[in-house]
Image 1 (cartoon, one colour):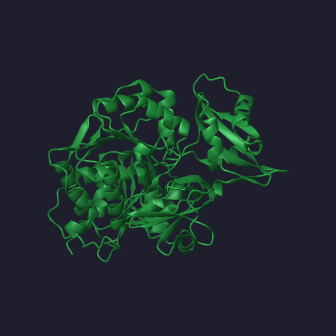
Image 2: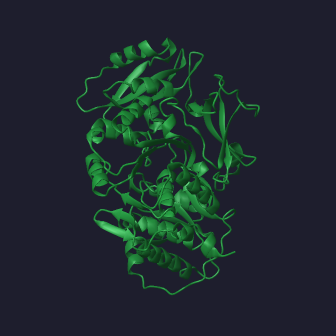
Image 3: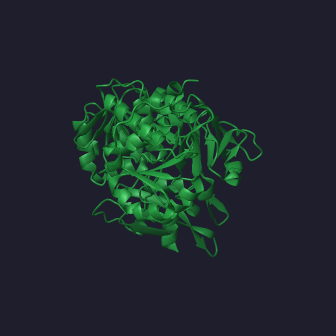
Length: 503
């Protein structure tokens, strides 16, 4: 077995022309030839820095850095060295960081200048080596070293901690083979080539953001990194200037662009595709995008960290007649919707079951958590916790996540259905529905809304709109307006925080 051929990092960097741009960040450009050299040097630094008798191959090395050249070099360098990359949210408290470091046996953290300074005292106390951006850049070039051989089917490339929006973050064990399989499928579905250039506003510590890195490097394409989505007009202008062919986002990305920028009225000469995942974008916003960009292919995708990144895609040509569906499984992924007894639901019926996935992109489980692994990973399959139905053609429609289903007055109410209706109101930027404890109903429906600046939407107007479009038991009891929704580091609305506001 040849480690150069089997190592994920080496394979991702094998295609791009040395003179072609791989990464854009601000005014700077990193070309493939330079990126290869920087990754090799990073990997050599890690291998040469191993302590005698230390963990070596398979050692978990954390990354604490904002999106940028350093993150990419650190991530690929760790994997190239035969170690395991552990990308972490940049907003983690030192308490959470300490818990993760102990749980994963982390002895090294590769950190950006800013975050390296922030964790310096903690690292010293914890006995953790910090390899910061400045130290890596100043290191003397090292000669060739022997990198370990890799079995892509068995050996880890990364340990991805889930966002923790509904509880304590858990580490998902991702192999070299998991990433290769999922990358190959996404490239095929999106039709990516070396000519593609994606605008990246999603963090690389999030599996969706990393999938953009994997897929574009794999075809020799390029990524434009912009960490200023708080100024959406700046991002849009850079898309024009850098001639981006694609944009990927979570629901909040598109909701903000549609309601708080000139997105719909601007022209993007090179834009050929949009990609959305990370939750359900309400149909009202999808229709707006289709109307504004009729010649741009809009890929609605569904995934989980436990599936490396993506599980399914709704083909752009089926958006009009299958709006609201997550589509079908990717080429290497089998998706089933199963009853509690393990049998398949009847296609074309209103019967609801749980989405169960299998394929080469499915992770091996959670790090050091046999109980949760046994709960969600059974018989080589991932039990997603998402409830869905299947139409006569096999297209899957998610109804709700099991743990987010609201049980009100003996009725089961899917938050997504209520959110879809309220999102039709033009004053709404974002909407989130949660259950609130209620003495008589068990749970009442509570709605949180962030509106367009200057909007005069009132709670009773929202309830009245719901009465006209929903059964009475699905009309919200409470409507709360927020200046801004609480988001996690991946851009998803944190419903647990909303429930705390109610309490």
